Image (cartoon, rainbow, N blue to C red; front, side, top):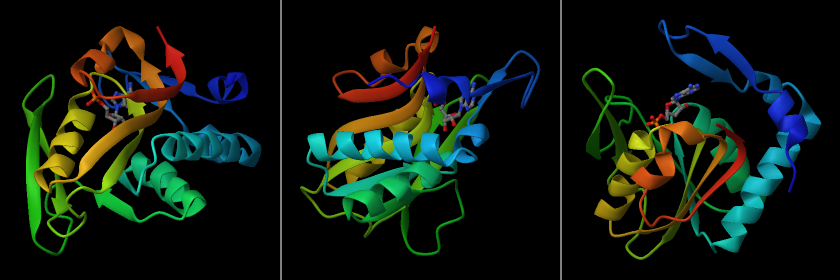
Length: 174
Ligand code: AMP
């Protein structure tokens, strides 16, 4: 499906959060109910296509889309958070940034073994964050059946980093 409206509502913010990075700001999509609904609807269609049984959203913009998809599909929502935010027992995965490392965490009881999980975030760049999220889900014995993003930065080759994982992105920038 075409997402020209969505694409026109994604705003480039040069040099944010640091010099040389062009930040893709999705807040205009959230402010436009028709576009937001369309994005959530297409992400939810994908979740149904891969027969997901749970939605895992990555902090923080992955919560906005992931929670909406989970409600739309009547599925459980699982937050994947930055370190130190989740109150119960957690597992953690680290991933490399341009400079240094980052980490994300998930509750140990967030998913059941064999549960089919779709991972949701706003944007696929290098794929490091999503790959770490996939490792977290798999450590609980659950099955990642796909990953869905609003935006793909094709030139950063995130799909390659996610190897054989089925990936759906609604808007691509090259
Ligand atoms: P990566 O791990 O390189 O695929 O980066 C993806 C994560 O970082 C996502 O949670 C995005 O929200 C965020 N991100 C990375 N690059 C950008 C960008 N240029 N604009 C907006 N968000 C970004």
